[in-house]
Length: 564
Image (cartoon, rainbow, N blue to C red; front, side, top):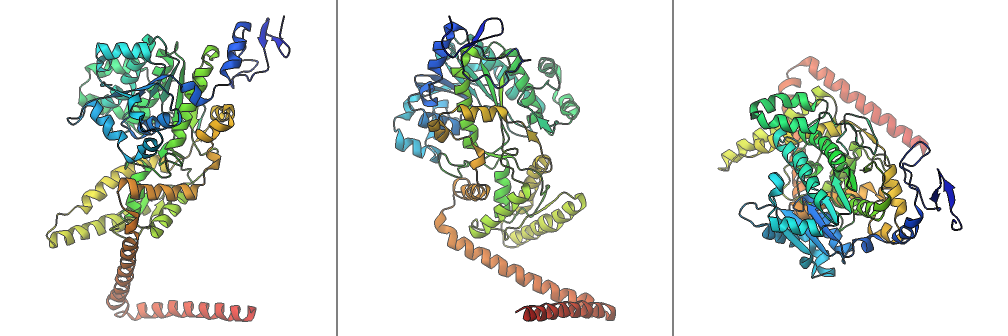
């Protein structure tokens, strides 16, 4: 006998008024229909909040030394204080043990708020020596046994994010390491969720990207086998043909990794989060936190310093920036959703396109405007020139401005440094900047449309308190304020410049403005003396232009007087 409110559906199955899976439909085999014995369990689980779900859980985290991983670690420990343990896979590096590397991370500015709210959080972090590029992740038998027996949730954030990584190394860390972690996860006795962090650009060869795993460009197993016998020269030669219409090896291998997760992790409860261009924090642990030059951060700093003056980009192209805390909140919430629904999980992997372009669009022309405006109001110390950037998609104009605004001033400045007995450095800086711009111009010149139905569904599943604590609603994001905080974050946390130095920085910027006006005045005088003053025709043209300007101003003044 059915309980009140339940109805029969599809050959005696029972549905009791709870929400269906977002992919459910009359033609889908993945409809969420509960058996009678699971109804009471489901009703109980649906009441669990995100912090309650993580209570007593053991979490395995990869990539904790990276930008996204360390923010996830901080947020998990701060907002889910009753989590039991967090196993952090870290390799030895530069003479530092895994424990020393973790200690260095958690002693940084990022963890200040957590230290104030929960001083004993260090006891929950367990650093485990591991090398993801080595067979079996280079885990000791003791550590492997602990992980297999204890882990409940995996967050796989580790990846090489270098766009110019050679294919062999990119496959090793982004594909093979993911595969090995999946094999380890299959042995875990109490695993509830495997959360894989990918990228929204994994399928950037498509203009419209759904929340599904698409077929890979090549069979990952065949590629891995081929790389074993190929020498480095051959690998480098075939890389452009392999990656095809994808811009770099990072994007290419992240697409392969998704397919590996789908195929090898078919028996696991897997979810994938795909962030677009990850930027500084929006709100947590405090606005504008950033600790690296990667992605747009380096370009913002170069623009603020006056080094970057032109860039190949489309003013109207969508700048799909997403704050790092939104990505972290989406990952934690997605793992919660998959975990509480693990007994009724669909056959297809849940994929979340963590993007902003379709929900709260913002364009590169607007980014440029707000970055320059911020750095003019709050300049960086010892700027090379006043901030000013020209975006262009024209090939000839771009190279003209590169020569005039980048290479020529850098060359002259290096001559000045040599004359004053200092080591020249500006041309090297410009060369590095141009390489970074070359890798990013694909993303600053094109736009994509990402489907975000699963993200919207996830947001609607959160209770009011979780919506505040784990905010993923990018509709609330005010771009002008965010970009200003982002720029100030690069000043404070990347360049370590104190806000007390702003008056001196503004004074220096005014000095640069006066130098520019003086230089332009001298340049006009030289042009006059060399070209115009020696030619009767040039003088006639000059006087004609000046008289036109004078007549226009006189007409404008007379019109204004009559109007009033």
